[in-house]
Image (cartoon, rainbow, N blue to C red; front, side, top):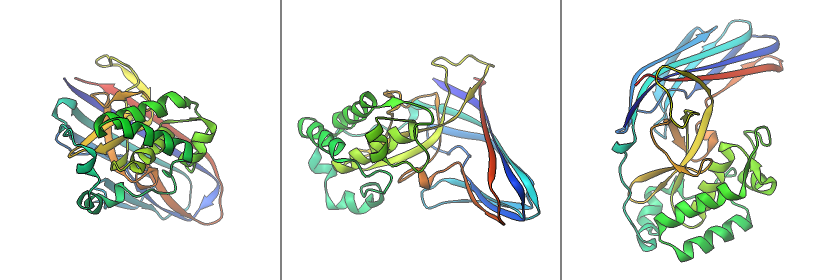
Length: 282
């Protein structure tokens, strides 16, 4: 089933005093892929003097922009139109452990095998992943590890921050989609399965109605490599399907934040409002 979505993502920043300039990167443009077609994409910034696009090292679409006049607010509005057909996703092979724990795989997918500070699993989770991997083939182990993280965690908004590591979220047994993804990525890497963090959107309705606009938010899930990249949503313990729109991927959240930048001059960010609207059109 093909689904078409209009996505509007708005970020509004407020500062306690005028800043002289800001330089930013936005990763808000849906990925072009065999299962996902980007029909339209527009980015508007106020105030801004110029912006350009490039594909980063991970293949993500990045829009770079600068606001070099004095300003106390910054508005970033991304609008896109995208079609998703999960049936067109490539199917992973049923590889065994000897086929993925090779020097060739490790060399070719090195960045997705090595841990980062955000994904390093705590000992308890690492041991759990090892026990699951010992009794299952890689494809089954990956799914079972993801579901084990889902079952152990409680989804609590505000329990963690973007800087929270997998180990910290595990200790609290609570977090949001970013934490679930970091935990699963780290556990999979620990047992030798290449894994990456994915950023995007998830329509909140299980069966989105045509023409209705829903309030959503950015979402994160995982992909693991078994000959092809397989996508899974550990927060919802479900496969990635037509309700998911992929923005990009990387080693962890720090490779695909929606917006990041630097601001010139002494200031304090006093307000940040983010709204995401998703409308299914077909």
